[in-house]
Image (cartoon, rainbow, N blue to C red; front, side, top):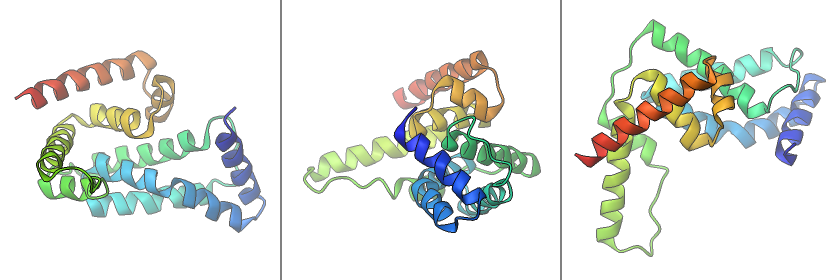
Length: 184
């Protein structure tokens, strides 16, 4: 088992016993990836912020029931995914370019690159983000979990509650669709 995985499980179990510093360490370790996932999946900053808070609230509420059966990050993303699905059911978010720009803002281009390269890289990332936003919810979620969190098919299946082959199909269809859109 990965050292970070062991540390995360140990921290969560310590938090369940009342060690607030253990929770703070978990939060510091996972907040950026979690928020990035939620922002890109929800395509709306206020929804992402709300889901982010709700996810951590659920972690806090579930601390005494936590069992280290899966990686902490998988468990955390599963909670976030379930809240995201509930959010989709309540309202269908609309994709807008501003959210893509906000999501890409954290990806800065190194200063040593030439301006013309920087512009083309930015344009490429923006086109990719807009293409991802156009994917159906299930495909977009699978792509974000795979690309941004480097999760396996099994981990994505566990988080989304879909079968491994379903996840594989969603990723295949999504990647084909992204290739088509980026080729245009």
